[in-house]
Image (cartoon, rainbow, N blue to C red):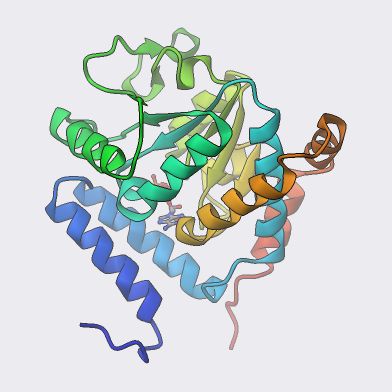
Length: 245
Ligand code: ATP
């Protein structure tokens, strides 16, 4: 039991969820290491959502609302931390959920599907019985995507994606929204919209922003998107990391 007065209370609760998900086969061992890297960045960020992250969330919400076929990608870490919010996001915006794993095994795909279903998901894409297609004809396990899902999407939210995959996705011309605490990662640098913040804080804010913007005119949403400059936003995000006393 972690006492609420502990200075790292929230962070330790999240860590417990990650360990539990690993024990339940939802998360690969490397997913725990990826989480540790994220924790370190969050520590330096003061575990708070920065102003540039809020701007990226608003741009992401506008992109999702403008999308014809938005898709929300779910990996082990995402399923462990924000399964319910991902389901809510897909229901709110009419987009699909797709299981998208770096270390793909049938057991993990099943376990993650179970978590999403328990959180209220309808159809889940990216299952093993589907015939996955290769993005841009690149015959690599990093380029697989579900037809009707990431393969056909115009806007994709890929939280905690790996750099090679983000690169492939970006080259397809799709709008790639990522959530990554590391503003220096290849994923952050290559995506169209990079939200530099902890996924557990981003999802409720993104859902709220979509609700706020849902009735806006298309030209207003397009303006929010056009005014967003990802490279500039990443530079601003970096300023929020405290590396001095
Ligand atoms: P890249 O290949 O994009 O250069 P990487 O090798 O660091 O980056 P991975 O290890 O594949 O990428 O992915 C982990 C990334 O996810 C890390 O950048 C880490 O900061 C981030 N991350 C981990 N946990 C969270 C979280 N809870 N919220 C947001 N980002 C997170």
